[in-house]
Length: 267
Image 1 (tube, rainbow, N blue to C red):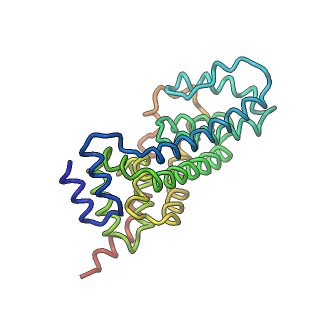
Image 2 (cartoon, rainbow, N blue to C red):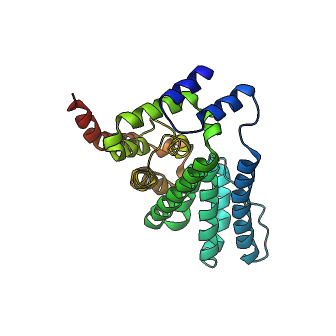
Image 3 (tube, helix red, strand yellow):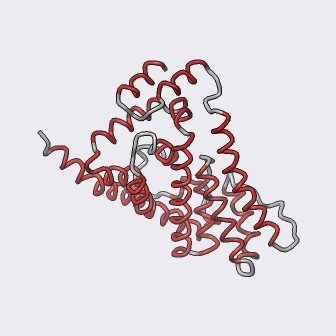
């Protein structure tokens, strides 16, 4: 573990590596009290926002409200929320956005179910716009939170992936937008890792933002469209048929081609 962290330090990932190394080596909790306080402050902001939405809704039984972990949970949530969406559209929209951004900010799995829910409640075009907005906002929120407090967590959780990502970013610096688009469209690296690691390896925010905003559109369209026929899905694996996979792959190839050509032309 020390060797991996030292390698990252040699590659000049960013400042503060030695401190992160000591914390991981000693086995202590990797965050300082100030960093934990900041994270708790962000969490409290989300909680207060959701509480405000809850208080503006009519008195009812909201026991169905929970983060979906399966298609069955999602179907129950969709069936109950449909009756509120037309009369309390603003509250449902704001609540949806807060939950989606919260999940991405704190790396909570299950946003694919939220994307399906957008299609089921709002249709394809509104659903895609909603998912792209919330996914980009959530990724940006995670980016800035990681920039403040994420370094020790990234070093302790993903040392190998971070070494690979740092090397690729350094090698493709001149055409970094194309590479980041490629990562967003293809499953080369998990999106959660990209959100957290990008500020650590000095990916500029404007490139991160553009790559996220544009790169998630194809997958968002596939997922939201599937949400319209939610009852026909047997598993999350049914989202991506052969045609969808080929389309995403081709988009990824097109996005990375300028970077490959540029690297080949260098001496």
